[in-house]
Length: 248
Image 1 (cartoon, helix red, strand yellow):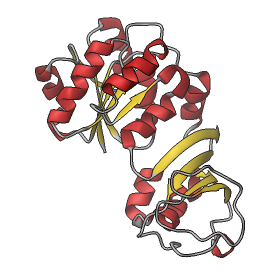
Image 2 (image 1 turned 45 degrees about the vertical axis):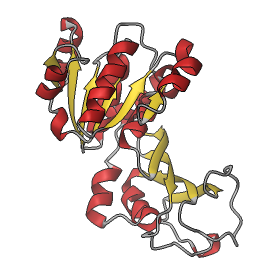
Image 3 (image 1 turned 30 degrees about the vertical axis):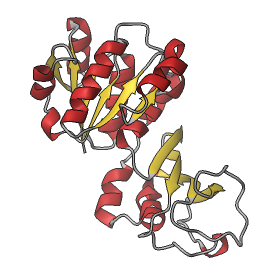
């Protein structure tokens, strides 16, 4: 998938690294020269300019992007960028600061696909918001171990099975189960798996693609591409947290 990230500060840059680690294509937009240089030194394509200007976003490839993440510390820039993203048919994710959470959420939640608070959520949460869909990474537990929440689809091979009939790869374990929007609970063996049910699974990166094929119904090729490889550097970045004291 292709993403445009507005803001190459700590929040934006760490989110970009997590996406790149999973083989997604990322272009960043940044107006601060030292911050822009730091992102380029890490191998990212960075467009110089104000992310709230349509010509700048067009230069970053917004017309061909799957999603736009407005992750600067400037709420006005973030909201304007998301409105431009909406115009171009992108999924839009807007960062707000913790202090503005309630009021801004009520005001803008219907205008963008998702509002995030990176100070609490972290880069992995920003990545999940950008990807959307039926799979949500919760945490990197170790360099090759991840906790993911997956939503069953009608195409899942195990749709209609019970928990006792569900056989995941040896390096994957079901931790919790939830019906639709209901609470997550410890699963019992006679629970039936149905469309929109949620499973929280602890899995080695090497078997994530198999887990995705079973529970989400992805093709082998797509599951392998989406599962990513996982790296210790990505896990380290997530564990460090995402407090961002700068403009981006």
